[in-house]
Length: 136
Picture 1 (cartoon, one colour):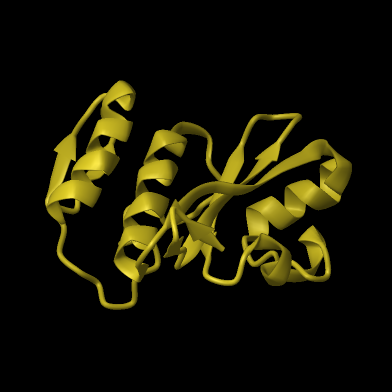
Picture 2 (picture 1 turned 180 degrees about the vertical axis):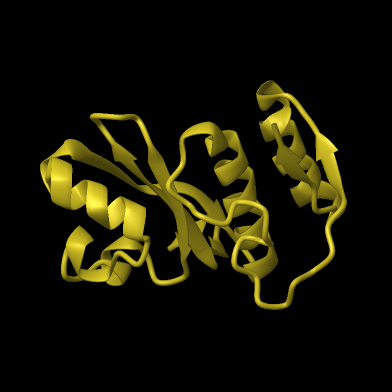
């Protein structure tokens, strides 16, 4: 997939429980459909999410296959962290304080921002090469 003639590295996706409002934020380089070829139940590793799908049924979950896009691995990790932090009061993601699954364990400086400032921060990331993580 391309955006403005630039190849997209990966996407952020969201799986939302329509009954209790909890969400799972994930990232993939291969697109949501490739990641979940066998359907939602085929590839879910998050035990809490899988349990709720078993309890409520897959029809009670809404999937946003492309919540956001990224043009590099680092940007994908940072954006996943930003979206997790945006929803962190009601999220399935178990470890919300690591580096969003980044195996390189980059060091980040934490600052507090308002939700309304999140998009400005993402633009700052893109324009200045700075990586800012938000926490509530």
